[in-house]
Image (cartoon, rainbow, N blue to C red):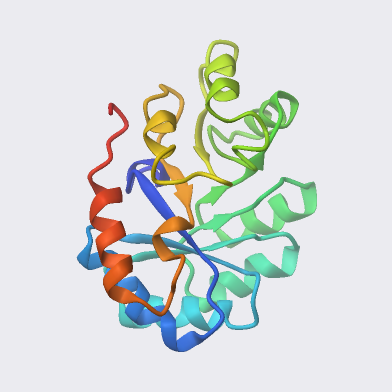
Length: 202
């Protein structure tokens, strides 16, 4: 299955404490979301990925904010099932490809998207979505880039997500609103229920 078809919303999570990782993933799963992107922005991130991969195997856990070649190998060794990059340099793309994991490379412009398409990528992260033009931008490039699908991430909320998901070139959205409070499983589960109900044809 395509990464973009696993869930209408991919939770993008910043984990400061490893102890939050497993309860957070289980709460998302109870709410109907079986995928999570743990950003490599904190010292706890790799251990959080390792914990989720080991203790919540029903959840597909990925590593986000992969911005250096060494991040890709470290994420693979921690048990990540996919990689997400905010941008796409040759070194990072090469290291990510070497892991054999599915990769969602980041693009913010038509030129970046075309370069990724030349490398064989058809599914991209559009980041930072709201700041880079949002729904109008993605709608405008659907015609000239018909072979590409996107997971827009960055500034998207529960209110704005349906607008993105209604676009033909959007498979899912990345959102941090589901796990705004990583220490509150009940709130996360409730947000996941609502997010799981969103559909690309909304």
